[in-house]
Image: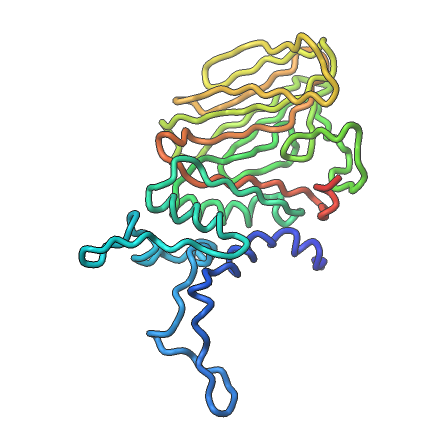
Amino acid sequence: MVSKSALGFSIGLVASLVACTPSSSRSAAPVTSSAGVVAEAPQSQRPEPSLGTRAALGGSPSASSVAEPGLVAGSVTHAPPRHEGPLATFHDALRDLEAGRRKSHVRIVWLGDSHAQADFWTGGVRTALQTRFGNAGPGFVHLGMDHYRHNEVEFVLKGSWRMRPKQPSSIERWDDGAFGLGGILHAAYAGQRIAAMTVKDQALAGKNLRWDLCYKPATTRDRFELTVGGAKELVAPSDVEPRSLRHLERETTGEHRLEVHVKDGGPDFCGVYVVTDPSARPGVVLDNLGINGARYATALA
């Protein structure tokens, strides 16, 4: 059985996308018969579904939603209408992306519980949005998590790895509270201590990908070998600051693969953020931050 809080936590974003329609659409009222029964409105009076509604339901865009900047009627040019409501900025960003006016990615952060963690729901929404508005890459990915899946990435994990907090759905604050975007830290403590990920989405083959590896050093003894594409390097922090999250940014154009091999110490890995170069073509990124057993209070902790 799924609790209301758990289900609502997972599907809140999709529900908002479907429910948020422009004010111009909401103004068209249904036709009511004399008996008080709501009848279906004539075709000419039916509201056009919002951009977000069609995207969430996988529908195709209408002619008005894909128009280039300004709609020309005779000699008069009209600016495209903007959306209203709590997700107005989001809908306007998708409209601008589709019309070719936007220069940066549209990024969605999906907080969820176990229903989202396996990337079934989130993966389906990601694919639908990226197919229509542009594929900007897998987004945030955990590194070092056992039994983890992402629709666009393959993983290899060798040795023994631990997760912190041990119970990731805890609503109690743990340690210094610095976990990075994913809310979970992973570190290797025995065996080969290797974690690798390869982007398997063929639509991204040959494109330039940007990688942002987030890690948290524990001591100055920490050493790990980082391989991104064909380039290999040794990472060794010269100092350790409390609550210090470090970022290593790299790029690949051929083999879209990243690997960390811990050599000494016990650095924690917050995850990897992988996106395309927006200057080539901006698109949609959907970060899946689902955690098994999570509640709203999990993220707040």
